[in-house]
Structure formats: structure tokens, C-alpha cells
Image 1 (cartoon, helix red, strand yellow):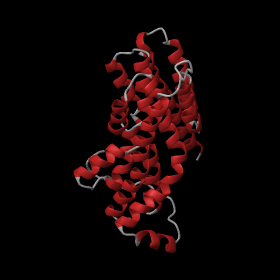
Image 2 (tube, helix red, strand yellow; image 1 turned 90 degrees about the horizontal axis):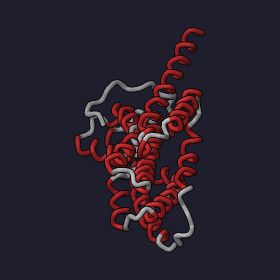
Image 3 (cartoon, one colour; image 1 turned 45 degrees about the vertical axis):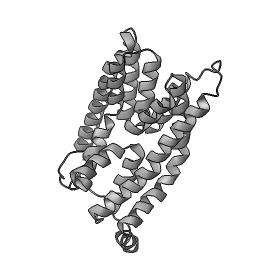
Length: 261
């Protein structure tokens, strides 16, 4: 995360006064529990996803300690799947790391948008938030902060840590369980198809605008066109080209909207 706060973003209309008063009256401990409770619905998806990662990582040859270390140190499902898939394809480790980092670049945008809310926290808090920042904790936290802009810094941090506790601990545990169960699956049962299907299931609901769809389409076309490149390196070129195409479409749409006002 960036070290200093910036100006506050445009905010949606706040909830009614009674709801605001209840939220603002919560102690940090109560905010922590509130973050945990509001994270629970995500477990319906997160636990099967963690189990699946454990199975796939076990299939790729990682032992239990390596899988646990992967889930605890990296703590990013999409990046973990990417790295495991590439390692399974015998891609050089350095390239697997670079690809995993590229998949996780969205965390930089998440961090930037949290700066107005958490940027004034001490350095160790900012480091902890950066480590625990995943899609689910970000989505919950930013919505909470924008709906309740008068929350104190302690309440914001406590809410984030509550959400992170409910997300990150089950992720590591489910990965371990998946790895244990995966060892019982016969090698004759191929699971290679699971990762691309999982990614499709993750990405498809995110394609909500034309900019998203154009970015995905261009990235797919470029990845196919560059499939001749060794060790999947074409993906590292296709991804930024896709993002650039999406950014151009979004810029064009914004200019068109301003022109029609």
C-alpha cells in the first residue's frame, strides 16, 4: 500500500442515521466480529476453491508443507493456480513467479483505492493489510468504508482484520485438506481441465462492461496468436495488450459520455 493518505473519493449516499449510529458505536472488537460475520457467505466459494487448489497442487507434485507454505506466503488463489499450472507444464520457476505476479497486479489498484481510508495507519498495519489483501477482503472493506465514512481508523482496521481472519485461515486449512484428499485420488483420474474451467468461472462474472469484454477478447486472441512462443511467454505479452485495449475502450466511452452531456 502507498504510505500516505490522499483526498477522499466521491461517496455514495450514507445509510440512515440510526444505522450509522449503530456502526459508529461499535468498539474495535465488535467491528472485528462484524467483519468476520459479513465475510461468512464468501466461504461457500472459498472453501471449495481452496480444496481444489490443494488437490491440483498435490497432483503437481507439491508435498503438504510446500502447499501450506504456498497458501500462507502467497495468499492469492488465482496466482497460486497460475504458478502451479505453469510448474506442472515444466515452465522455468522464474517465469512462473513473474506470471503469478502479473496475475496479482490488480492488488496494486486495490491498495491505491484503500489509501484514503487506511493510509494514515502505522507502517506495520499497512504491511499487514497489504499481506491480507485479497479480492474478498477488499470488496467488503471498501464497501464498508464508503457506506460509513465516519468510521475511525481503529474501526476500519478492525473490520478489515475480521474479514481477513474469516477468509485467510479457512483458505490455508482447506488447501491442506484438499492436498490430503488429493493424494487419495487415483492418477488415472485427470484433473488438468479443472484449472481453466475454474478461471473461466472466476472471470466470466467480472466481464460487466464493454471495456472488460474487449480486454478479455483481445487478450484471448493475442494469447492464441502467440501460442507458438516457448513456455507460455506469449501470455505475458497478451495480458498487457488486452488491458491496453480495455483502457482505450473505457477512455473512448468516457469521452463520448462527456460529449453527449
